[in-house]
Structures are given as structure tokens and as C-alpha cells.
Image 1 (tube, rainbow, N blue to C red):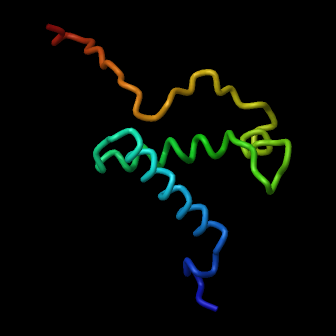
Image 2: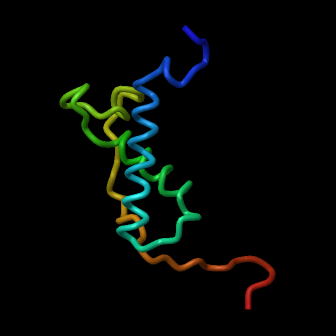
Length: 92
């Protein structure tokens, strides 16, 4: 047994692998550059916590952790065009 080895925590390693795969697919599907991988993984983890799983049928990880139903009304498709509004003293 090797302490702090990734091979000792197969469940977490499998989830990390799943998040990376989903993020890659989202970037390819949205035709986005690879430097956005960190945002894609963050978005994927956010979605996975609000989706049902086989491990806990009928309840999301979010609800099990916080005890309340997640609000998903604000979600948009990954890669949706956005506009950034500049605010402050240097507004042109």
C-alpha cells in the first residue's frame, strides 16, 4: 500500500477522468479553443453535481450535500456566445 497514491483512490480518479473526457467533448462540440479547458471542467463538475446518478437514485449529489433541490433555471449550453460589458472609469 502506497499512501497518497492515485491508484489507492480509484473512485476519485475515475471521476477526474470522466470530468476531463466530458470537458474535451464540450470544447470540441462548441468549437472552442483548448485553453478554455479549465472552465469546461469547472462547468462539467457543476453539472454533474446537479444531475441524477445511479449511486443515489432519485436524488442529486447537490441535494444530498446541502439538503435542498438545486436550481438549474440559469443554465445555458456550454459555448453560448456572451457579451462582456465594460464598466468603470475607462468606459468608451
